[in-house]
Length: 74
Image (cartoon, rainbow, N blue to C red; front, side):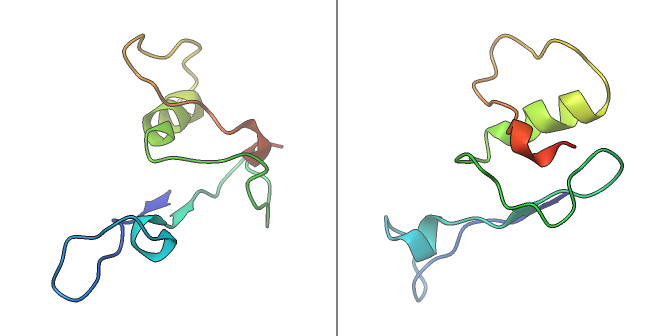
């Protein structure tokens, strides 16, 4: 799984433009579709839910707001 931080402008932390808010996010391995581009919107809050599922747990922690983007799975 690859996750990065968001971009910024100059020496600033970042604003509200797509270039400043877009975060590369990738996952590969058994059961993951190869060459798939997400069919649904993704958010970094989904990362913990995806890891939870990859390790075979059936229920995520109730306080997590992230969702598993199902289109990444075969």
